[in-house]
Length: 298
Ligand code: FAD
Image (cartoon, rainbow, N blue to C red; front, side, top):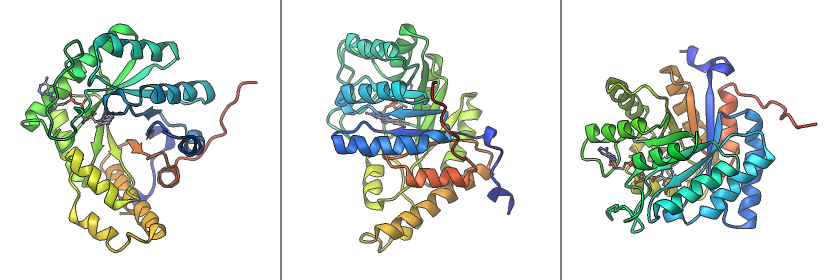
């Protein structure tokens, strides 16, 4: 239909962008060029990930603090509770509050051994994501977002157990969920039927990853339990040495996905930017978002 090609009124859409903290000065320049390009699109928030086991603790903090200080954006700092005592995690939370951060994405995190190794809470630490959400809410009046898994978390015994996990996080004070990435929209739509059927009414933003590097994404998907359909692999077939075409394909695939969701009534999108702006900017443009001049204090 022609209908879906016409984006909804701008006010009806909410987008957010996810970044990761840079490791080097060069990566920092890349990140900031992406932030500066995407900021005028006025995202609902931008989030900054937290490395496994707190490995990016300082870098995540510095990145969100710089976003608070130098932009009009509302940052959300990711935080995990793996391998850390409560006091240590609470220090990080208080540090965010003091830096002016008011939104945290609370996650359990993955065990140091990676996929397959069993999560064991630190003896003096938060037992999991729900406990962390409660801890954050006890420290400050933060907005707290959490994860959601359209294909269920690989460790969940069943979809029911997975939804119980989501419910526990909401009971603890989470007010928004962001999904793991997925490529088949039906997975998300069916999941949302289950979520709403379970009486969960918070926004559950689909996590969209524009796939510029198929091999890398497929390898990452394997680790997270997200399925990679054969039709997606086919679309990138033979393009390993052809990044320019890959980029065009990526824009097409991601816009198809987003417009497919739009047609089904989805109005919120969380983009995994990989610290790059071009594809996300183009998709947002197709969605009807236009840069607004950023207001600067007199
Ligand atoms: P949880 O929501 O706690 O779920 C973990 C498992 O426990 C599930 O199997 C769940 O079903 C089960 N469970 C928990 N509570 C209950 C309950 N009450 N009843 C039944 N079952 C329950 N990782 C990072 O290291 N840094 C990041 O910045 C980061 N950002 C992420 C952002 C998003 C949007 C997503 C989707 C994931 C992110 N991750 C990140 C990955 C995440 O840390 C891992 O997927 C980790 O394995 C699980 O953390 P969680 O908070 O999603 O787990």
